[in-house]
Length: 267
Image (cartoon, rainbow, N blue to C red; front, top):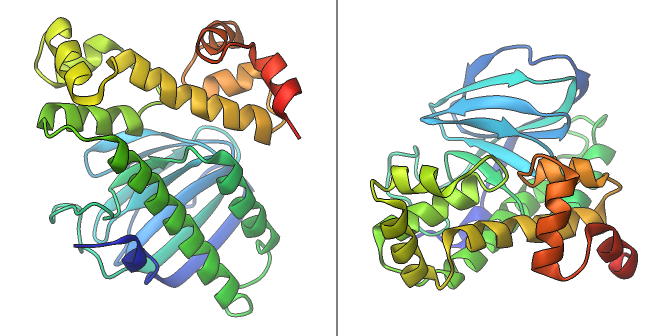
């Protein structure tokens, strides 16, 4: 079984930070080792394995060895690319232990900590790998540790042995900041919406919508306190169409409007 400590055994091979690019040099590439692609400014569309989606700041896209990574910039962007060795499964088809790296997107919820790691990454943008190898190695392990910490917290909260519930939870966490509906989740589980809701509630103690909203509100709080983004920008990063709808959900969930929450709790 792999543990968080094994993630710390990752060995950095390549590190590339690029700013203000209109698009990637290659629309698709394949790597011998594990790879991470992360947007700093802007966003990009990706496909790896069977997963497709959009990644922005706060997300990393993980590509296992031998997989093709398709990527297209939605707008001019700055991004980080890392290739590294890791003594885990050689591909996403192998058994996936608790702390195995995924194939596809990881959306980080601890935005304050992720943002602080990326601030250090930007500081090394113009320094080549040989000059700052130990610093960049440390930052790679910081990213992997943050992933392991998030995975541990998620695993400890989920006690259901129902495979339908576990798959639904994984899907919600992976796509929490994209358009999601109860119908979509129920269809993926091949259940009616009422059947799916009952099984999810029994397995997690929460309705699917409440579970999704809780994830989104945690990220909204982090963005309110840790960034200068407007309410509309935060809404889009949390999966809502506009700031008006976010404000309504946020007030119901947190007992305050996003603006008053930011004024009250921001240091």
